[in-house]
Length: 161
Image (cartoon, rainbow, N blue to C red; front, side):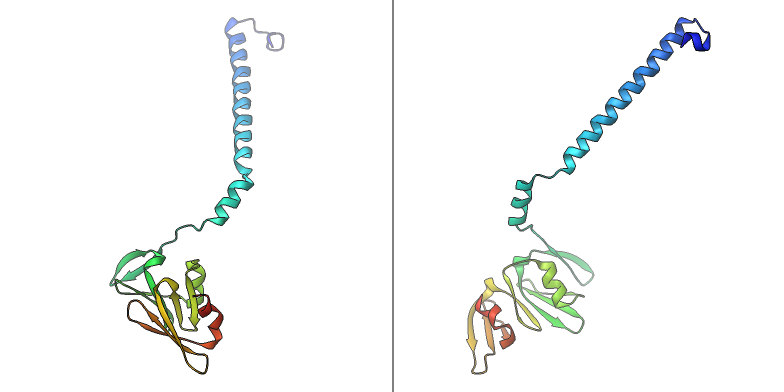
């Protein structure tokens, strides 16, 4: 380099050496980060299978009188549709959520809830006994004292309770 720039200064040689060292260090850092992120992007298939088997805890956000609450799915006794919203019945009271029953049941992702009527979704843990009538419809009696109608359309879901 000294021949190209016709400079024999020792400071120029040191400057040139430090620039090449910086480029080398920068490249080393770049490739280290690159390999690090490639390694993170590759997911462990065994860890994915373990995550699929476990159900993540999911809390439901509801509001009552302007206050926001987070409910655990186990606290919900049953869900009822009313106009364009769902009413969540818990042991603590009723909560309203503006959502369809189908989308709420998909969001809930809990295996303990069963659709027993087009207007009701019931937590199976709260069902005490079932009373059927001659047409295939009937009532579910819950531990809270509530009675829920079920229809013959959802008989298979009622049997799983």
